[in-house]
Length: 268
Image (cartoon, rainbow, N blue to C red; front, side, top):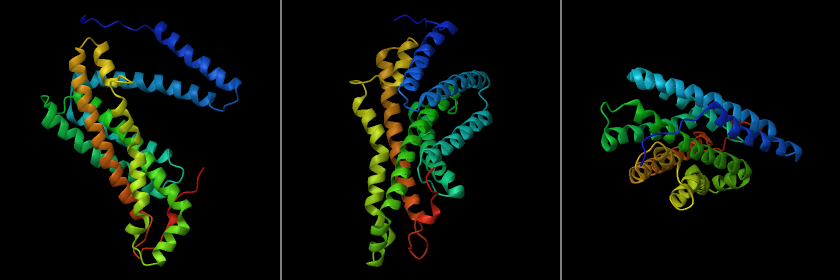
């Protein structure tokens, strides 16, 4: 297999961008109301990925642990905001932001550090070529799982408030009253990663494997790395979803086991 990588020029990116522009025009013509969001998302993609490319190029040359930790913290903080923004009824105050960020921090960072030290073992273990992409994939997928988990939990708790309060009046504690919603919320949060595992290699070629193949690596080597990543992402998403569901459900009740839906923001 050739080791050379075809270099993309600005013209190549402009051609691919034209397809997105055509899509935006089509959605505008059909009055779907998403054309503006498509354009803004495309612009954010260009700016964010180019900025990330410059930052990583610098980090790869410096390889300073404090700078790597700073970038990891920024990634976590942004992921925490995105989790909150994707919910219809997030918790009010710092809880709305901190719950998702805390769940992702405990799960994603723990599994990423475990993988770097025990499985891959680069020297040093925080080598940015491995640490940053691994953590980025962990946070990106865990973010989706946590957002879906909390959105399902809070939205259905609001809709089922009469049922929950009836169970509390009948003598059930908060864990029993909301237990089914907690389990359903975790299942909802894990659906995307379970589907991704089921489809990997048959319906789709995952992103990391595609990137390594395009970079000239052996397809078998790329497959091994992708298997590792899929397992780590699945574990991270599952643990974070369980943690977010438990903390979120507990937050919906006070010390006297009364349902406190006033701790949620109204939609919109």
